[in-house]
Image (cartoon, rainbow, N blue to C red; front, side, top):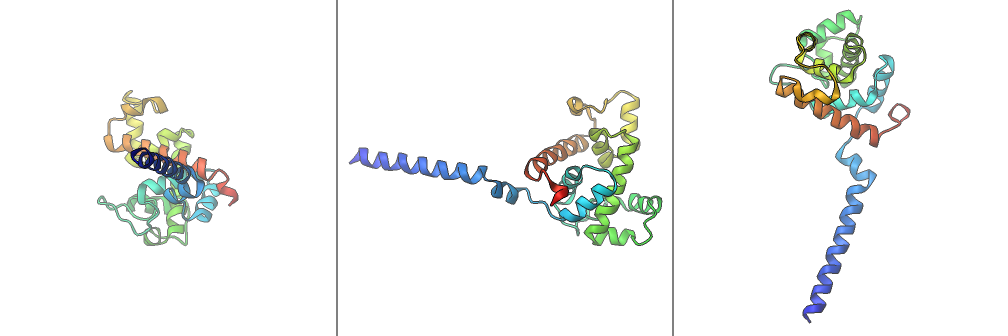
Length: 192
């Protein structure tokens, strides 16, 4: 009788383990855990500003988890969490005549457009180095330039632990994590 119960338990455990494995490894489960909202807006802005759409999506995920109404403790606004001064500067420099800081804070498409324009500016300034761009998006380009100039950080992927701000170091790691997830789960994002 005990052997029979033991066999049933072992069999049940094996079945549950198999189901759990299938559940966790399935693409739909992964897409449920790592959703990608505003795909069309992200793809359009990424294409307009010659950006990797997966990077834009990863930054949005880390900044607001795709919640456009989010406002940070520091006052950053919109789905990509731009500081109001940065948003106003980007709106002016980018020539956005139909977008205001208020729209950036309330409309995901406006926030993605202006945030992507700003990412493009950072990408040009840091010659496409994604790690420097991500750091600058979080800590500001002046701060990152200072770290690079004084040798605090060289901007390379293998030296992220040398970033002196813990928040920025963690931010880079999180953005890269989601960037890699989105590249794997949504490889043809611009085609969807």
